[in-house]
Image (cartoon, rainbow, N blue to C red; front, side, top):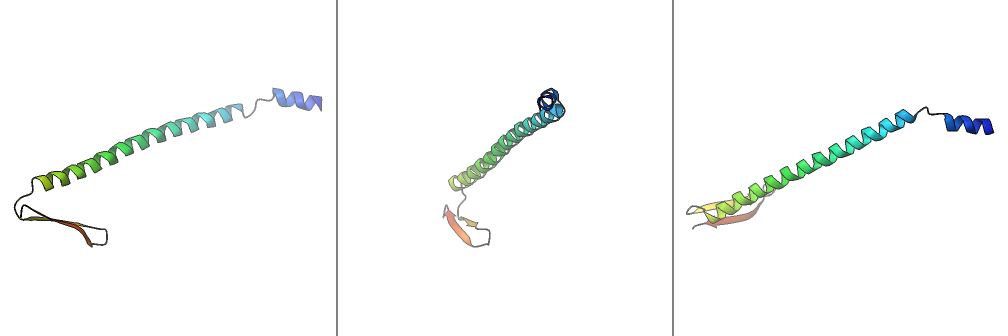
Length: 84
């Protein structure tokens, strides 16, 4: 039993494999964090652009312009008449 325990302590097979898995997992997690940060920035930027476009249209709308926002099924949700 003592010899089996000594062989298990000295055995280093699988050591490289487990360290490679940890390294690859770490790289994947860091890449995912960077990718999600970039995605968050892009989505926030696009939503800000849409809000600014809507705000500038409501602020500088021409005379008699009507703006209607529809939901995904085509039902009007918001209707505004600018300058009329």
